Length: 112
Length: 114
Image (cartoon, rainbow over all chains, first blue to last red):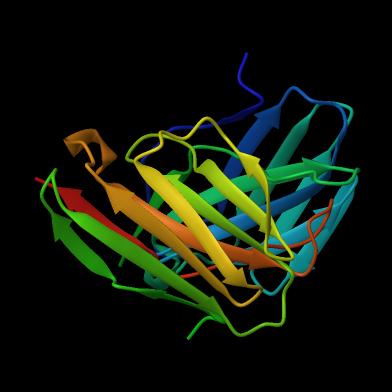
């Protein structure tokens, strides 16, 4: 079982839709959870950062972590064509020299 | 504009060439990374430097040779590459090398080996 699994996509939705992106993981030691957004031919940029379980909201974006199920989600409300990008989940555990483990990424297309 | 700058953005090289990728971070961070991004694969961590000292080399072939002359600069020297090495090479940095530190990526260098 891979450490981090992410729905392969691609995903296409109409403008205004609510989008749900998900990752599952196997390492219960993961404590830090991040979502990166990567536009075509650009580097990934940090979108959301959460520690341990719970929800975090930032504008139209909500990150949710359920450590009991080893499941994280990113919700996008009122999706816009400018949200079209690849979204990567990433996570790490507590400890010196701990490094991020990434999912494969899912490509989202929001149709006008 | 990100705080991590990579050059060149695009590079085409033959299998017998020698070239280098350059990365500079303007964030005052102490840790720097090289990642490889290929289609349909997760980001692959190649090298990690902390305070100019290499702390990790993830079984990367010797045709890739990193260099970190100071905490702001990172190079990836390329020599006798293979076509399967064609990918997006991403440089990144973080404040420290430990858990929970957010890493910031550069725009990447698109490498094509012909």
